Image 1: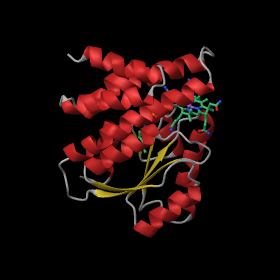
Image 2: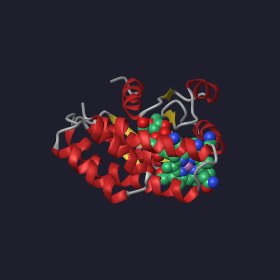
Image 3: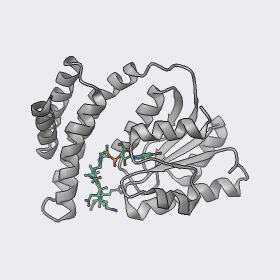
Length: 215
Ligand code: B1M
């Protein structure tokens, strides 16, 4: 229905044009398009394309950085809209969230945080490159129900296991659930490391988080 706009969104990320991406995001808000459709059918298509080309050696780091910046600019416009549309105001649970140490990919993690907040979770977003100890300490400090650990690199996803083990070592494993996600993460990996939940996207993360807190 909005295929031309979605195509332009995707192209703005491929071109690394942050201003155009933000303008298109604003336009979609004005048109009343669901922000998640704009992200998933528009901007993510472009960022995935650049990621694929990068993986194949056809584009290089500067293009990857610019695509990331364009994607971020668009998401920054859409996030308040997503939060506004989330109606639930009851606090469903507390989630400490972060991208694990060594990993600076923030876009997917931030989307997950926005969706969780919009659905009624209190989210403590610790940012990117977060050491395991910091996540676990924060969870203890705020009496978190869930620690959400994002990882986009095969080299950093292994640290998701460290979060599970750190909770074990502190004797609070039974009190805090661990939710994992990120492009290389799978259900099989989540099971292998003893995580309590896995989701491949932000909407799924909300469903899984609800189940984990029994709501
Ligand atoms: Co990076 N990068 N990157 N990168 N980057 C990937 C991940 C890569 C797959 C590209 C490729 O080679 N094809 C590859 C990883 C290979 C691997 O290990 N398997 C890669 C690489 C190699 C690198 C560098 C090492 C490149 C270099 O320097 N040589 C470097 C690493 C830096 C570091 O972290 N230490 C690097 C850097 C970057 C940029 C900084 C340039 C930029 C990030 C900008 C930013 O975040 N501010 C970047 C980008 C943009 C990407 C790609 C193209 C897109 C990531 C993204 O934002 N996707 C990516 C390729 C790809 O994934 N297609 C790639 C959009 C986002 C909405 O999706 O993050 O997957 P995603 O999040 C989803 C789900 O995964 C899930 O829900 C989200 C929403 O639906 N999800 C969760 C995520 N976290 C979750 C947590 C949950 C539940 C679900 O529960 C807690």
